[in-house]
Image (cartoon, rainbow, N blue to C red):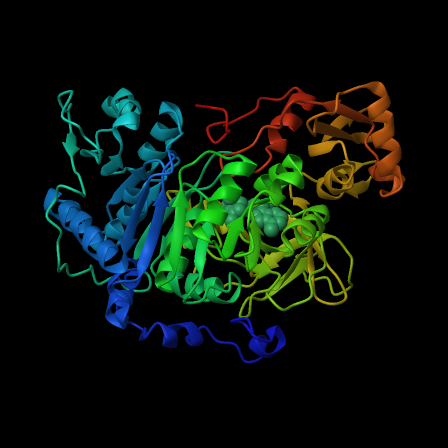
Length: 568
Ligand code: 6R9
């Protein structure tokens, strides 16, 4: 039996007080997420349980119990307070996926400061933009990334402290730099966590920017209520699970479900800094006996590309539940995962701004491959018509995905940008900027980002549907479909395709693919052109940046590219 049990039963009379009760949280009481992720679990008698198993690139391991996490996060929190960091000050985490990143997040929250995690692969410009916007007071980083901070320091008068977690004493510390080593600091047994209330600012996440300038998304400690319950019911985490969230905490998935969800439930999680390859990932699952795996379509497509044979080399029998997020999960990927792992990937849909999972396929509920599933209990979701912003009751009609405020993890505003925040609401609904449709059984289907939809001769074409059809072709590893200008039809469909190993681009192959997808798509959705490429531009969280391909087709400026994967 899954944690959620019967979905239909759960939605009846749902109230977030279910989670509040389990968390022993009283309205207007203290709800410091950092305390919940460490001290509370120890108080429940799980202090000696493993919280984190970390595996480095060379296979070396570090293990931390909940007591270790509690003490180490105390040490960090006290260090920040002693430095003069005040509640509400922004403290940036700028590290690879090392233990200090995970424990540091808990420590920052305990101190009352606001955690601002950023991908360590960001270059100077990307970093500058976000630290300036957030007026960040301190940054916690590694030696290997400190050079980037030095390059921009003179432009950041607010950034008082550059804290280096692995200082080796070889070169003198520079202006504002401080050495802090968890291993060398005496562990702090007792630390009074900042008495954060529900509305106290907790995190500042910068959105992935697939569609424009990155924006700071303000979250509060109350988000724990949603994150705790969605982790329990969607990821189905239980006491004896070994959980792996593949996301980097620079992306919201890596914090909401890579730190807060699993640790507030007192579950053991594994993290690895090892680079992606099918062998690396399967070996990790085998070695750590991973039971619940939360990943993303880009990774799944890459695993599909690596093929079925490599799966057989490893014992993946520990896997119990698989979940995906970040992009539409093509039906092919669901069918394939069922075939090779004996378990389907369950889709989950949400965004930085929503803070927690909004729509999902729940364990035990019938999966319709290609569908995102149903709204989480307590979430009112609808498809709105884009003119009057009224819910469309007819099944199958494409419109704007919308949610009724309120749920605990929703963003409270965009940092320094209240006007843009207000603009996300229409007729009392929150609009995430995506299009979808609802079927007669109440399942939601993703159609595309609001701005990705192709309008060809007045017909709306979903890039996702065309990409899914392309992906079923045996030669296609990945694809991105965008609009191309056309004198007659205004826009036509153009597909970019990356091939699987062993296939070479040719006119014959293009024709073969066209004939293959013709059987699956309406004539209006057929691409006019396929361009073969080696790889597709992606964000660091693995989302295909159709915006870049689109801009190229239209001869437009490409805008902010700081989240582009290859943009160091
Ligand atoms: C968690 C996260 C949010 C945007 C979102 C949508 C896309 C996420 C999806 C999905 C289709 C899914 N997205 N999950 N599209 N199916 N299951 O991804 O946050 O980086 O802010 O991106 O990603 O377009 O609006 P974020």
